[in-house]
Image 1 (cartoon, helix red, strand yellow):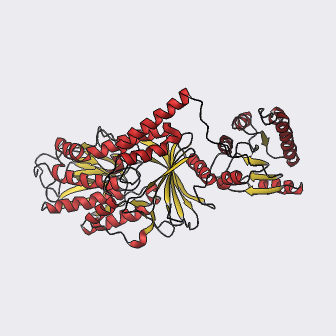
Image 2 (cartoon, helix red, strand yellow):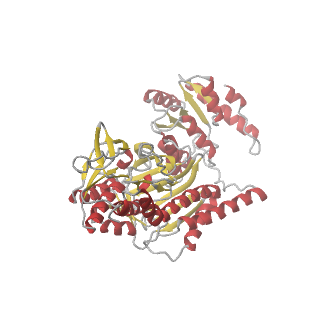
Length: 571
């Protein structure tokens, strides 16, 4: 293989300084040395906002791979050990226990860096000890420029691949893409490069105080918490929780609303605040063209699915990519065979199966948690080092796909041939008389309205931040909610829709207030389920009148009749 592999003193560029890129650099140096060669590795670490946020979940396989790369994880980096993953869909919940070796959450976000950044820096230290050089520049594109005829001196013309980064350019024999699913380089790596499909996502850190849970903490995967959101992942750490929402139309506002719904249902501790909210993308399948002569993609730039948790697949892809580059990097056909068909085929199939399983789990509704338990049972016995989903040795993505499909078909048959099944509606909670919730990010308007209502004998709870509203309404239903349209995190109209869609909160009257007195804003407020639209400046005495009119209309309709609100809405 020496004629098609990397020669001694060959130059290799790694694009991306995260876990995948740093692990690839370590493995390149190690594999070259075992073959009696050295390689010059340059890692372009142009940053990446998403690497500021996630913790690192280390499975037993992850820890074994890291040890093989010479990377030691200090004990103080381990924030906690997960006892399992709780799967939630509708009213059903199941817990998949952690493997015997344990799931470690590595994180120092509250006092320093998040876990994945800590891990990438530890790997970078190992690579730097092997003479890898890290360059803090963002790569713009990679070009192929053939060698000049008659020039064989590597110092003058080292390779035919040119990496252009922020105005500079360097030549290399091989280039690896490890910049993740959100990389802007997807279309400028090589002609024909086709990485994995991706899903829109949003992620954030939720800051809160220490949480003490008997028996340890669990990560949570809430399937289909909102329309357009396929899943909400909640990963606990010390003093914070990492939240990731993904789906075909997911936005940061969807994540915020899902977080509020999780607060309402007791999935998160009280008193949280959102930090570092941003958009990202998650891989949702396998790439179909990952190699070219001297080039390949690893990690999330090559494959993945939203149900992955941890960095096991990223480490596996990086180490296999490094071996393929060293042995067959300069020959396109040999590199594709060595990397894709001989070493990555199982990971690529898992990525496709995991992405398809997510779609079936969404269709399965409340049957999804049980389907995941049955998938786990059908793949036993499993070792701590076997590949599964959510950082667990089982179920495997293929077993989950089969069980999720059966659950979805069963759910569809029930809906077709039997009466539609609604989740059990909790017992109606009587609203507290004369309790009003005022939600407005304008302190002056909020205080003025609250002061007037209190003068009329009402009890007012004012919210400057809407995050705890869902939880408060579910636990202590008010007489009415006065909700501003423009809020910090979520559009007030979408918040109104969320309140009206859940059985615990749908009966509470919502009055939307806004300084935009436009017909389309009024129409959207009423379509969202609001009892009335009130333009600013608000006439406080009118609020009392509307609430009393609503009470009278509901009482006149009776419990079995639809709500009568025509005269209230018209006003």
